Length: 374
Image 1 (tube, rainbow, N blue to C red):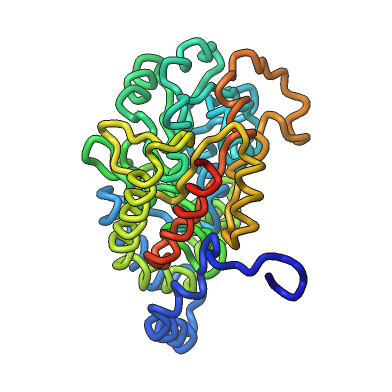
Image 2: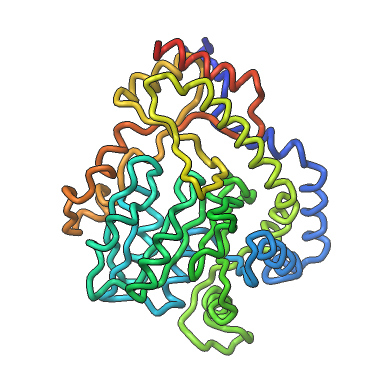
């Protein structure tokens, strides 16, 4: 027990400092390179990272932007989605997915999620489509790819844009293909805690459409391709040189870090399979990257308190759905059509999982859970 009366943290939720210590010399060198070169915005480091991340995602184009929310918003703007338009979004997700729609003047329309994957349920999409629907945003929640085969079929049937919110899914695959190239465009976040995280905010758009990429490049830079020649009403949303340099250092490590996450997820699965916990489900076509390892239990709060007492940090992703936030109190949401999404916030619990978790720490989490659940 710590001197404050709080339990000593034995297993942190995610120790970013430990991760960065592993590659500190390379990060220091990247910082010095940017400082010495003096080009801090839209320079060679950004171009190099954009090319590398596009190759990684198996797409022809990547555009670095300021953050994941901007990435989603700029995609919507580039597609001309705005006032009067509806965009289908998961009923359970981080609020940024909804905010991007609202910020362009559109209306987010929630679709219930699959009870096993927690991603948008394709079986519920058809009933949500109206003549005003323009797009579907498929969130790869927790690093689990959404069912892009079914969603792409529905998008094509109704003539809708299919946008990936891949903020939690760097490196994940669906049916053998990387996320980031499965829809018309994808938005990534490089928030520090992501599987591929910057040392500050950052984001990117990936796409198979070079023309769309050029539109995003204009929109992120005040609507200009040439300085002082503004072709459209754009924004200031550029991934800076320093963050691009750091991300370029980290990118070669991503698959190894994801493999470590997968190893921990498998240890959890094997050890906790016979407990009352509902464990994450992986679809047959999915190859997740385990950004989060989220379990379900009807007495989540009691379970979380017991883990806290054992010195284990956990989190809840997410304690309240976007449609239940004050920001969206004005929307006429039919919650009866969202039975799964309405249940999840009271049951979800995110266990520690990260590339720097030790085997002993994993065993500590498993032991504490077994002690509480049996």
